[in-house]
Image 1: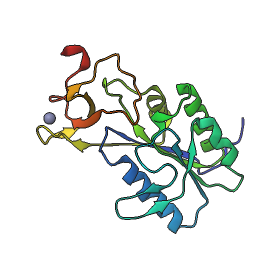
Image 2: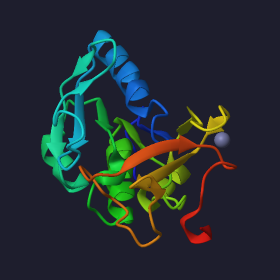
Image 3: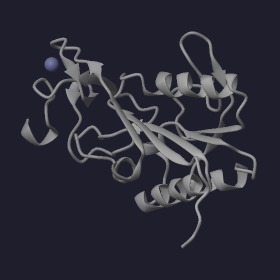
Image 4: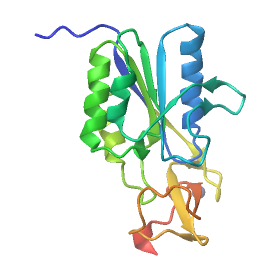
Amino acid sequence: MTQLAPGGRIEVICGCMFSGKTEELIRRLNHVKIARQRLRAFTPRNDTRYRPGNLVSHNGVCIEAHPISSIREIVDYVEEDIQVVAVDELHFLDDEPETACTICQELADRGIRVIVAGLDQDFRALPFPAMMQLMAVAEQVDKLYAICVHCGAYATRSQRLINEQPAPYDAPTIAVGGQELYEARCRTCYQHPRNW
Ligand SMILES: [Zn+2]
């Protein structure tokens, strides 16, 4: 039987838009920094909504992060002595869903604490396959909530609006830097693209 390095684990931070996933990731990574553990953090290169590169919290904590397009790229950055690997907005990466899962599993088997954050559902309220697979194999899954902008209930869905209307079902799953807007909505207030 292959002996796995102790201490490895996968943590998934998921939820809808505006649920505070990146804030929670930064909170954990700040503890990693304080504990002086060796960390590598990554953000998708195509996420142009914010500054590419570093992860910066609302209260000014800054974590250095490398921009990547594919989860495969992180392997080159993870040297022997790295203890923690973090990937923000994992759903943005252009990989086959199995690739993200396989690579995160390999890192965890090496004894690395792997923390990923990302949307659990797309704007159609369908699961992002890579996130779904990671949740199944993770040691810890935290699902965060936003507040529904319509009724104030806990929101679990991301409604994409184009010209103030729910985006059609066949709109691209990933749309960065477009003219659309997102709203966090609860199950009741969410308008399914198939139903309008
Ligand atoms: Zn609502």
